Image 1 (tube, rainbow, N blue to C red):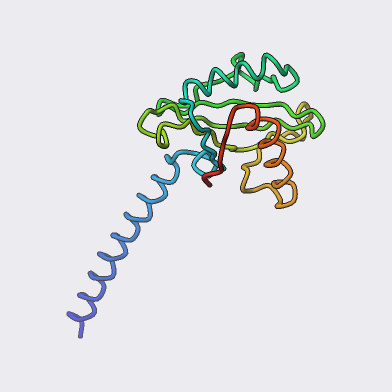
Image 2: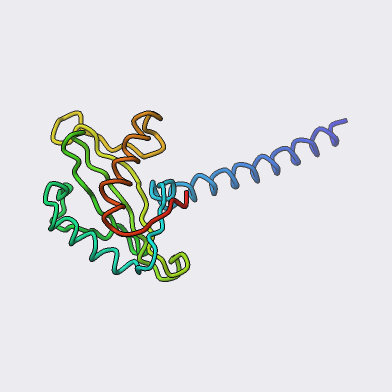
Length: 167
């Protein structure tokens, strides 16, 4: 009887240790994942490369200075996010007092059939106030999310070229 109890204890500890190890690995991997831009709403813009897209965004902001904004710690129109080829661009929408924040993957291996791609990642709500906070696009209430997506598609994407949603 004692031998059987001892074997059950060993098996339980072994499997428990394996599950703890796997759980710790999963938590570690999730913490080092691609961040919020893995959940962005992505669009393809036809017949332009990602590098051309960057230039189009810079030109759009020059022609429409109301969109120009610099996030804290930044003085660039387009910012490098990480070493994996992700860059960020932000657009100020005055009537909503929000900043729409987008991601562009300049990694050549990520280009979708040679077309540029841009992802609607998050908004900065209540811009310029102490209540300002970043909200991922998926975490915005449905009605407001539809409105933000509509603004982004009509005011920004339509000025960058022919596009389609890929999300």
